[in-house]
Image 1 (cartoon, rainbow, N blue to C red):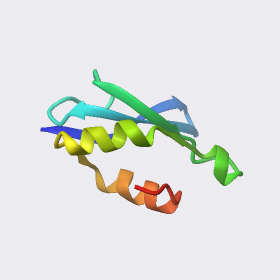
Image 2: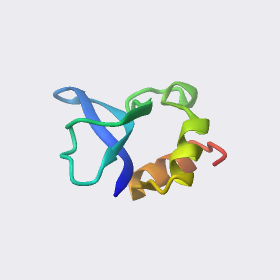
Image 3: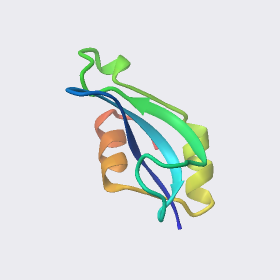
Length: 82
């Protein structure tokens, strides 16, 4: 099964996440299929907190990819019309 989820980057006490498409059996920071965008939780401006490719997201969901609960919550909070 293919999932859309977050993978962690950044250094200690400075998290940075990528929103990726990945096989569910693969470990969190392992090989991924496609990078859909990024999320920086420490940014002050809401417009600089998230960058995301809506079109690729919609295509992957059509193909059967399941977004994680965190990704769904994050996109709703960022008010990205999906």
